[in-house]
Length: 418
Ligand SMILES: [Fe+2]
Ligand SMILES: [Fe+2]
Image (cartoon, rainbow, N blue to C red):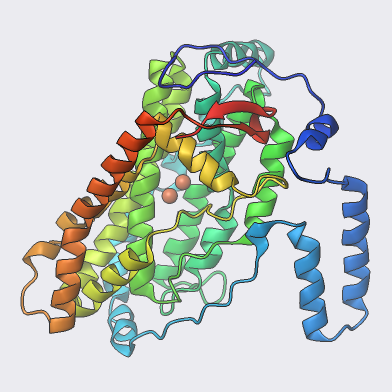
């Protein structure tokens, strides 16, 4: 039985599929069933062949073949890394004591931090099974398209190792030793530790609720971490902080909306879970946009050019290489459901730009170089353009009847795309 969308029927109880894991894979449109035994054998042979000294290029080709599993998302990317202006590195090098005084106070001490356990049934308590039963009862009210958004958000959080790796590519701020005592090193590790609770909490909720195919969800996470991400930051810390300011606000909006919808659906505990995560994202957004504000103050020309650069490249979502072993357009499908449900939309993208333009006082910057002045004009006009395009595509989507797609995460039940 197919489900209707969250927008059409907020209180709908979605039907569960009874088809088996192997059966489902065989039904996959245009794909071969994943042979788990042979995958295990292939990984073992990879390990053996890696120890037998193959030439480096052959080893790399072999690893790529093994990891790829026919996924288009694993295609090799060969774009040239852009050069970092030396002034950017000088500015970052001069910001150590600023980061110590302005950034680190935004972290929460562990003893005062919430933990996933605060929101979940306590497995050491006598009432554990009863609490799990109550959670599952409440989760029955969540429609399929809502679950797709929640799973996509959770998988995005679970790929945290990729984001820490990415952060450690930013020139001048990376954690050089893995326990470096610089304010940047401290921030990167403590930020990661705070973020780590987001995926843990959503994962445990989704596991206990019994509404999703956890094996497919977990496979997607494994594929995604293996794929990495390509935000085109090119090790430039200015680009990195534009990206992280944008992304933290995007996740604040997205978790905030899943919280709001959970409340409408009567799942108040899930509303509080998503709302608590959204509050963390907000605090992180303040940190990153504060760093960029300081960079705008110290080097307005360089900051302006990086802002333009990242906007021209377009901010790619961190999970854009998402894959579940079968669906090559999984990320686009998930993003389309999120857009349709109002969890994260193209209008939000424009509103984030507007917000950052305001926070960084971009419109009122004066005495810029002519190149930076052009960048300023470009950036300030962009949100209105994106807004117009988003409205046009939204009204087109309303005219057309929605496409439907099955999602492996919810036992291949179908949901409406935009
Ligand atoms: Fe997060
Ligand atoms: Fe975040």
